[in-house]
Length: 380
Ligand SMILES: CC(C)(COP(=O)(O)OP(=O)(O)OC[C@H]1O[C@@H](n2cnc3c(N)ncnc32)[C@H](O)[C@@H]1OP(=O)(O)O)[C@@H](O)C(=O)NCCC(=O)NCCS
View: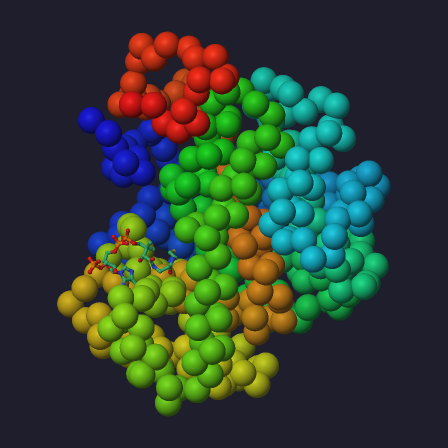
């Protein structure tokens, strides 16, 4: 039996993430996502995902200190980023730079789980620095080294802009990172798990995940959702846009999900932030247009399990924070590394090389032909 897309195939038991797509629930290690969004920070959540429990004050301090000391880039990696064409896609830059981090770690290969985690945290710490450095260089600015005293989300915004973000922007970014940190066995997490199963190093594992997230069927839907809202431009045009799109069998970006058959719980949280930012950043028209599209889409899709997902407002939130559109997927990676790391480590505890099968439906027994007598097309 072939399981196209591996639909409904379980590859391991896991204690990391549970999604109840019928009840609009998402849990990381047993904690509901709305509780984590309300009370946790990205650092605490990353710790929870990777180690399995919420850290004590001293565990959290050690974790944050480790991230802080790992944030600066090796000069070799920064020089490499300087050489990339300014028109490069930031996901290509990120994939290559993370791979390069492995070149500078001469002990990249290790079987020791705690050393593996340490290397994973090194990557987690450096990814915001990589993204921000490239963004500044392509805009003709010098990269800004990490401030050192800021939290993960604030450090990223600081390295991007050179200004320490206010508490509200920091909180929004922090929660956005929490919401994207983990989502069970999605394509990029599976990709990381496959690479981990070969006992490859952490840099190869995370590079696989970034490569998989690069595709438009995985990362990228929030960019498309934002583009739609910007193009529609005004709430008065939302109804005709939605009616026309659905009449032409087009998809409304930021709607629908393979697992959620009701509201994506992350959407609820991000919509609230988008509303707050709309007032704060004078972006009410953008927010009202998004809401009008959502309202029309829900009206037309009534009776179907197609509801807004995380991407319906995440791009809008990042846009209102002043972040360029092509950084949305790198930010997704920056956060999801926590989940990738957690799953790779969990899988390695009971490792079995992942090696599925392909059902052969081709020909056998062809006789080898000299170059002059080949047809140049497929032989049946
Ligand atoms: C995410 C997604 C791929 C999940 O799809 P899925 O559960 O595999 O569902 P399918 O692609 O099989 O679609 C099932 C039906 O719902 C419709 N549908 C799914 N998402 C839709 C959307 N966003 N807008 C309009 N119709 C949609 C499909 O056209 C299909 O209709 P049909 O049966 O009449 O052909 C899909 O909802 C989608 O493309 N959404 C838009 C992109 C997006 O927001 N992605 C981010 C996901 S987090």
